[in-house]
Length: 340
Image 1 (tube, rainbow, N blue to C red):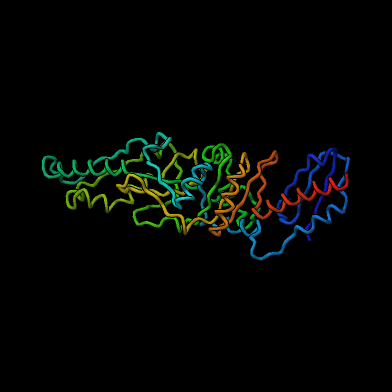
Image 2: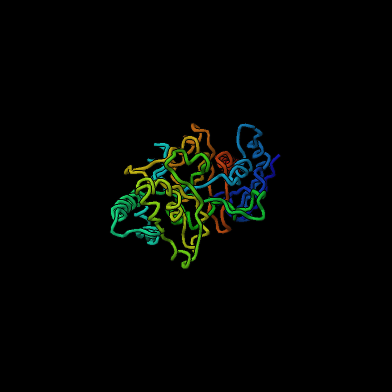
């Protein structure tokens, strides 16, 4: 039986607010603005009919348990990009690394040659030119896409520890989700890297001093033996490691990254097997956008949650809870009019 708490104050008919009490998915609190027209117990009793025990509906607790898994990662974006491209095309597009706003990331990669008993006027000169050409082209082809991970905390099993979730990062909502007005897509990390040419890893956060060593040393003896093409293939992952380093100031992003050196102009990741849910900010959310997300979540059997930003932080609501709250609001208003 759900507990319904009613806090009454003036003009409550016009100013009823509601929220789910954290940790109690069946406990609804109606916060009213003053003491006139206090809701009666009959109102509370009538709200009871909204309770459901359907097993096929995932509760907020069920979803948070899923999202607590270390295999879950999150991608923030705007509504129009999510709706028009990512969800409609069921794929994520990797961005060209050279277009990164981080000047350290889009800067030219440094490298040097070294070897033993190498005749600088011999065949190595041709090998160097060949390597430089191939390597520079590989860097031009580099593309990447970024995700947030959950933070490892001492409260690993506490699903209500909001600080650990990768989908509750205000800075990410602000910078990448249209100023808190976008959506966060939830994925299974091990299902995202679904092409052989993709390289996935967590980002390592390092100091400026460590970044100053961010260059490759090319072994000319091996280069002379196998040639530039095979050299780049053999040490592809070593070259890629530099793409998973960022300055320590970014460490709260807790980033997981996927990169590609494919020569394709555009590179995509199929998300049909990896997308598990959508987390939508309620800020300026239109009915059109809400209906599209509901339809997509239902048809693709993924969960849908909403975030409500308040002066006390953020409230998390499932789609089912959101519908329940709207029905409660409707019943309260109707009952108020009946008593008038």
